[in-house]
Image 1 (tube, one colour):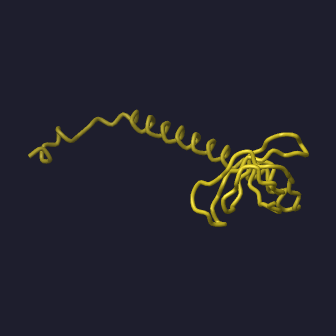
Image 2: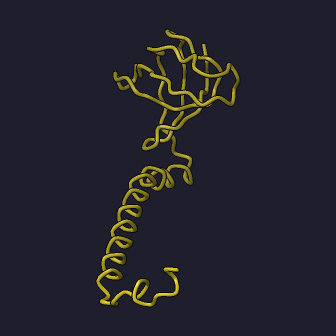
Image 3: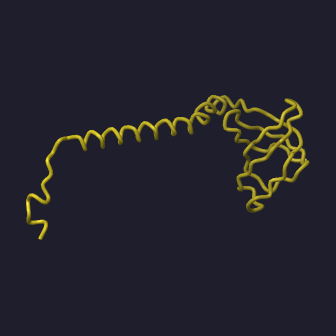
Length: 122
């Protein structure tokens, strides 16, 4: 059998394979670390706003309806709100029931992640 022949299973050790493997491992580790930092950056930047309770506020009319998923208050939705104070359309992620187009909302949200809560729904 092949397992009994030493020459068939013996390889000359040069260390090149280990160096290539370690370089590949380190490269993958650096790439994963960079992607993790980029993903968590907005959450870290919002921490002072959470600690000091300095939320951003917007109020205006919803420009697109959000009816995806179930009509329950724990459903995560992206809403597009035309903020009449800043005169700009912003996208905010909230947990809410269905949101219809042209609904007037008052929203508080975090400035970097754009996660927020609906304060008033008219």
